[in-house]
Length: 264
Image (cartoon, rainbow, N blue to C red; front, top):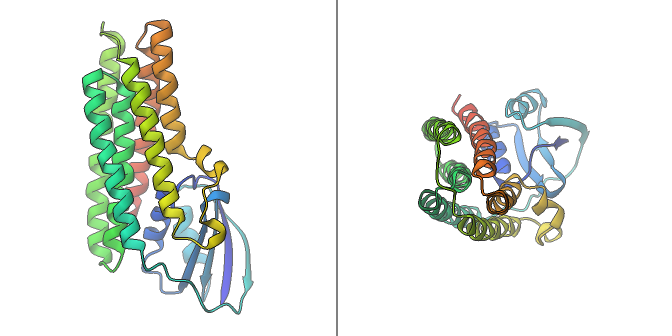
């Protein structure tokens, strides 16, 4: 058996891990996948040539680079028997905050919160597809990925249109206190999700690592909305909210394209 080490520069949180797992699902030569999300590394234990595996990972555009390939005698791998339970937990948390942020975003007229809610929804899609992938058929997984990807793009496009409309029209200011409070709770929710998923790893990876938290795209977005709320109050302008909303919508569309690649 061989083991190949990859550096995945854009693997910032467990949702990217799930994307990679789904992309590699069905490749019979793979015996085990060992993720080190905190250090953005993936070790693939496999038989035969690495070409198909490497091509599949690169297609996700997550900045994958093969570091090394070597022989190994390792044959025993720890199975995560609680995978479905963990995925259901983070799915519920992400979907709940999608509803909370979408509702409060519309009420407070904050495009930053609306966009962040779609980012939460995007993570929900990833975990949802992962649940179907656990013991499910590849065809069903691809169908769900296609629907989720296009749905995400449609929502993001509507979001962009609303940002443009608000930019050129006089609108009342977003409620900055709501932006700040909800973004803090969303930050906590993302931290909980990361912690829960890391509990499924070995002991060395069971604890929360600060470097992982603060390099996570989701956390950066939450912090962005937080500061946008502060700037809205300081400058009495909705422009900071529209800027963070635009950035997040772009990230949502990028995530949607990654999901769509799973359907091919």
